[in-house]
Image (cartoon, rainbow, N blue to C red):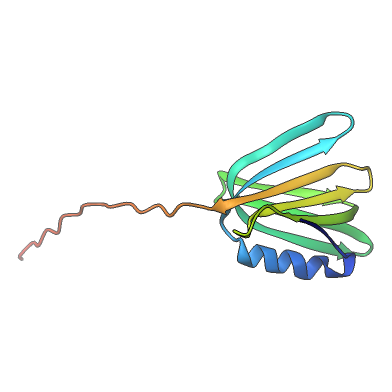
Length: 129
């Protein structure tokens, strides 16, 4: 089921989604008539989505990944429509953002990232003085 998110609700929608799906695995695609569909990133954890309106300059930021080596921010300027398509009852889905030029950005929220646990063996050495 696909729902259009009214513009007045974008900020709250993105805040709630970012909080609920923080660190979930994502895939980001951009589609337009000139270049077709292109995958920007796949497999990075969701860092958040934000809606900014500074002096009439509207922008949606999509942040994925973590750390400086594995992090991306994608800016969508002049957004016009936002949709959320729920894939199933497990709360996964796709955010579709359409800008003024007709370009669509799809943020697929796939699944929670697996928890990585690392075991490190250490040795304690006591030195007597």
